[in-house]
Length: 272
Image (cartoon, rainbow, N blue to C red):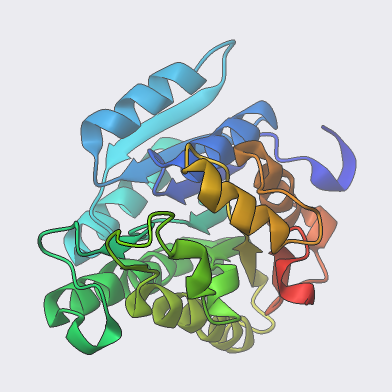
């Protein structure tokens, strides 16, 4: 790439790098010439992803990181700065996302009324506190550089309430399933965190934006895919690589006049 989309030589951290979308963000960034640091609590998994992406001279590093652990996040940032001398971008992507929770899950509640406090607290720790810690730790090198771009990943369920009808079992006597309250609430919090940081770092050269993706096709039951597709103006779920262009845009100078914004890429889900 060249011009405003050029990321050649920039150092970018992607949390949740072993996940479905995290690895796609890493792939796109590596292809764009960035030095990519993939961080994930699954150390072996993220190492495998990095090894897969590090081909044809691509610069991809894996670092096992628990984003809820202050010392782990500080180590991630120190290691990145030590390796590349700078941090140009952060994709705050790590999240706890039980796709569906139901009675079939032994340690999970099937209703809001019985939702367990420990799962609520764990979701807050990963989905919000983790983003806070990562943004806080990358700030000093970005401030010293006078520039940087942070992308906080939210969800359509951070903008609108989940349509629980999507999760109803095909079998009328099947276990009731729900999209959990903690996911929606934490993803809503991402939007607030983005606006706060964008305003707080005004005039420093650090830009902070939200990416709000919709649902991704990933081996879900056919009845769920059909329901979701019928609920979406584009008539389908996203493919896993379809959010990578948005990440490249938000990290590059192509979005140089954007901060505090929410880029929604959801196939039109929130349009009706």
